[in-house]
Image (cartoon, rainbow, N blue to C red; front, side, top):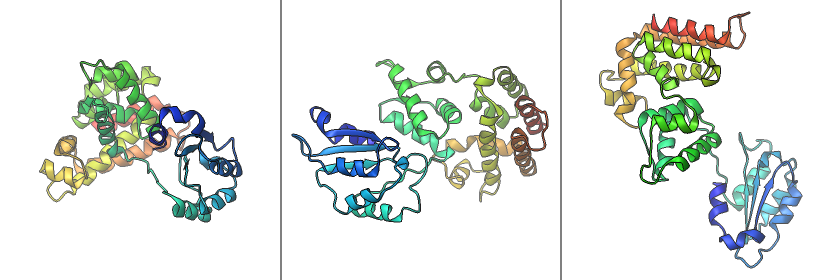
Length: 305
């Protein structure tokens, strides 16, 4: 949002004198308010963007400013990682009275594929489902990192071929198209013991490529949704299961239809309990000396047998 304002609120030739980027740890509220009261120079407006505004300690000068804001100033306060301190009720109230309070909530894991597809589509780039899931599984909901990686991918594409494939993901982001969270989950969904153990062996030998800490949430999310799928009013219909799980298309429910054929409801409950146990052990609870690699092997063996 702030990047869009920085790009579009002023003409390029107006930005030198009328666009200011500040950081909350470097300024106080009084300095921000004083800057906001300035008049623009040879332009209709000035733009002030305060990044990491959660680091601004005292907000009283800003509260006074918001009660009488300058019509020619666009002031953007960006609070990173979390919400505005709930104790600053007057600060929130004056912002709402003077302008717009926008909250960008963290995306849920199941919303990441749609975000990735829409982000790339806005740049006239297409992506296949496997590549989408590879990126979502390995990068997660850190939108700053995610968009940075997506931009790197976009810049790498030739003009004549604006498609993101698993090979592109491997080359540009460094996620192996054969040994990644997507392929591990696929092996588990299909109860492919050989493929799952091959991937686990690769991760055990290449810890930087993946670890139990990144795959536990992925597997927990899958089996949690699989448990919910069993309670669908019509669990034999892919369309009904997709709707029950609030998925964008019936195709997205394919893995859950396969999972319900390969695992019983009781086994899924036991797997969820085992994932919780392994998660606790990976954090040192009731686990004096078993390493992450061995824990990962223990979990995969339990799931597949």
